[in-house]
Length: 81
Image (cartoon, rainbow, N blue to C red; front, side, top):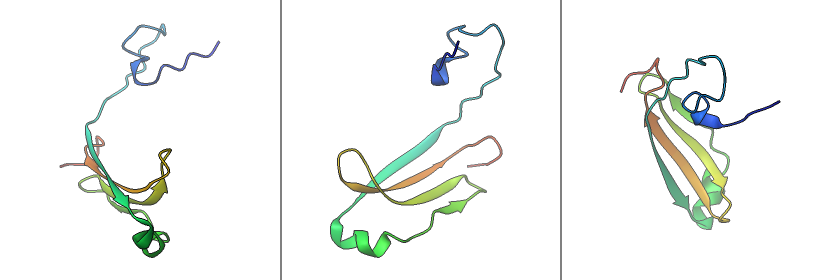
């Protein structure tokens, strides 16, 4: 049997063992990229700064059909903010 409950697996007592899951806060901004800028940013790499846990992902097409840069920062357990 497979139970996929995501972040609530440990909270709901679905499993007989403690998974020792940890939750970390993260602030995320989606910046809309219009078609004119999309060609310029389309080949950019992901940029990551591990010390503060910050990152910028290249433009991604979301289900609404628009492209966004995903910009995030937060604690990953090893990182400090």
